[in-house]
Length: 346
Image (cartoon, rainbow, N blue to C red):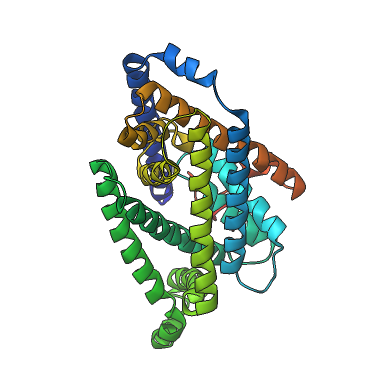
C-alpha cells in the first residue's frame, strides 16, 4: 500500500528531467535555425589560449574557496581536512554536470556525512545554508552591476525573485537555528514513543539539521562565510571575463559579472544537466548589453560552459580516485527509490 508514495518522487524526477531535456532541445533547435554556425566556428579560430587557461585556473580557485567555506560551515568535530572537503565538493559538481536536478549537492552531503560519522541531516543543512548565501551573493553582485549598467528586463525580474527567496530563506534558517531552545516545549512527544515513533525519527533528523544552523548565531563564522561566498562568486565572475576577453571582444571587465549573474539566475530553469542550452542563451542575453553579435556571444557561452563542465568532470573523477571512492558507488546515492526501504544516504 505504501509503494505509490515512494514511486511519487521518482516520477517527479522523471517529469522534471524530461521537461529539462525538452527545454534544452528547444533551445538547441532555435540556435541551429537562428544563428550562422559558420560565423560561430570562425570566432573560435581567434581564441586566445592564455585567457582560456586563466579562466580555467580561476574556476578551480573559486571551487577551492567554496571548499574552505563548506569546511567553515561544517561541525568543528569531527574535523574533516579541507582537501577531502574539496574532493567531496568536486564530486558533487561532477554529479551536477551529468545528472539532473542538482542532485550532486545531495550526493556530496551523503558522502561526507557517512564517511566521517556526521549525520547526513547535518551535512545537508550546511549545503542549504550555502545555497542561501549564494543567492544573497548573486543578488548583491547583481545590484552592484545595476548601478553602472542598464540590466535586461529578464535579469531584473530574476534579481527581484532571488532577493525575495534569499530574504525568506535566510529568515527561515535563522529561526530554525534556535531549534534547540524550542525542543524543550516539545518534550511531551516522548510520552508515547511507541505510537509516535515515525514522528520521533522525523524530529531527530530535523534536530540534526537545525544544529548545523547554529553557524548563523556565530558572528565570526558568519562573517567568514559571507566573505568567502562573495570572494568565490567574484572569482567566478573574473573567470567568465577571461573567456570573454579570449575572443577579443570590446567589452568591459564587468561583462563577466553580468554573465555570472544572468546564468546563475537561469540555474532555476529546467534544462539538461549542467544547464546546457540555458547557460548559452543567458550568455547571449548578457552580452547583448554591449551589442555583441549573437554568433560570437554563443561562442563565448560554448567555451565557458565547455571548460567549466570539463573541469568539473575531470577533477571530480580525480578527486573520487584520491578519496578512494568508486564511481560505480555513486550511482544510487540520493536518488529517490521506487520501493519501500531506507534512504540511500543513511
